Length: 210
Ligand code: 3PG
Image 1 (cartoon, rainbow, N blue to C red):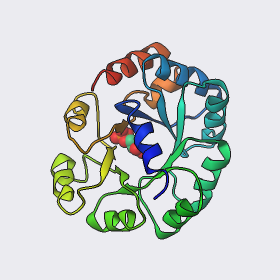
Image 2: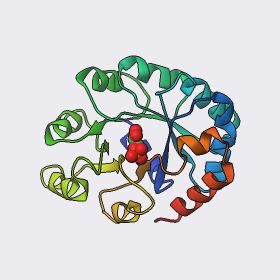
Image 3: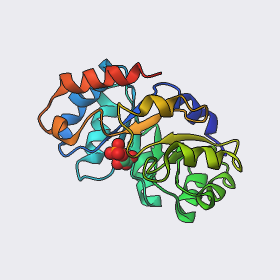
């Protein structure tokens, strides 16, 4: 599928992709500045709150060093919103025939989510070779990733879900893992209280993980 090399380039930029759920759009720019200052340029803004779209728009306009992906993309409409915002990519916790079809007809690089061999069949037959493994820890961890590597040797993964500073290094050592995602860098409470220096410190630690 088109865009696979672009996605490979983006996911090589940093070992960890902070997964952000933001309640107030006004916090988006200082948050993104803290992440970028800590060395994490690729950021996933999840479509889980009413503020998400405005937050992503503000980061794209005001923090040019940040590379904004839109996450929790569940429908073709979500994908369309991400494209219209000017996001660099879209990422989903799963996949559906509608979503894969919409991604194939549009231009926005898209990372579908997988958990099973059947999910992978749906994705690889559409040409997706970079997928999100979600929820990575709960769905079997590295043992599951190793097992899936047999029938799908070409696939590369961004595992997310249950990954933390304590176990990220182990995931990143896996040859098929391009980056990991996680909410631990910028927790909801740190975002709420504007704890930008703590977020920057956690980003810096994460950016040194590989
Ligand atoms: C996601 O959407 O990718 C997850 O919510 C992030 O999982 P985590 O909170 O366990 O890091």
